Image (cartoon, rainbow, N blue to C red; front, side, top):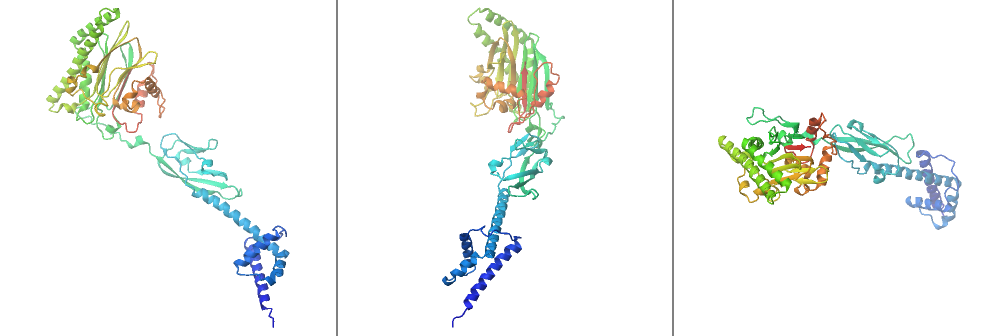
Length: 509
């Protein structure tokens, strides 16, 4: 006898499946009635129900095909299918929204590091991050660090006030979120480095030391028919440990119309090179103040007159010989003074190691005569009146000695066949600037010897002094500038990574 039990089981399964689907979406997804019967196409309904049947291990036998077709055409069943489809769309939309938010939150976003006290700006580039769906945003935590966000430029800007790893909250909404929806949050890390200058100590040197001298000296004075602005500063490497300024300088107007400017750089590795540089500078000035030297310079005046009158073919040769002989004696006398001092104090001559450069200049009817001598890595240069050319007054001891330098304390200096090339004589119509500097200025501002002959590099150097620098510190090189020493002293404190040696710079203008 044929049993209707399979039919009843199939119909019961269909009813249970329908009821489960319908009430699940109506009860848990808040989907109410009012669906359009034809919202989902019949083929779509059939496909969806077939998939649902399959997932519930229900197979429609061939003799139930008509029943199945009738089932999927039932208006109430179509409403349930519409509810399923609609909630499926809502679920997918919700997932895509949450996925979009998660993608932004988890995106590895690097914010450019900042430094305390330095102007900061970095673009927060939504296009680069591919965050085109963001509809609203704001930052929290920037103000506390001295920063802000510029809506127009899309940049984080400001001057950081505190160092450390700052946690910045980026709050945002994306397309698809309602206006009253809460902001999503993404935590950004902004690393603010401390001002490198603040890491250096400034320990005063020991004033009770026998060879103590001022840590910083800046002077502005008249010299000849010009003015001199000179500053000598203890380097940060010395200030950090409370040691002494090794550089020194001297200048003097002589009675015979000549003026002299001297710069010396004591070797940091030598025990009392700070005293060696003092002896070197003062020794040169003392030599040219001696009566014999003053008388000797009268001979130079005569040679200049002959040079002007074009009398004698060997005048040029005599001028060069005079410079070699006179300045050579001055340099050797300084060497002897250092030698005598070392014996007296029972120290080695090497303990007083110091470079030495000096120039004498005098104005004549035909222009300025410039005499010069140099040993070590400290350059001297004169810039012409029209500011179109630079003339170097010495060559510096680098390269040949593998980056090392030479010192006036070295006896071999006077025995070398290159000794004669350490002297110079120039006759210029006029000049705008005459400069002498230690390597504490040369190294950071010119870097290598090859940059010294290029006038454009001296132009940049003057522009730097005039305020075109990272700290915007300007020195107004005018004789009526009442704050010229303060400005120059501040400029001399410029920051240069890896360059923390003593600095000495003399500008005659």
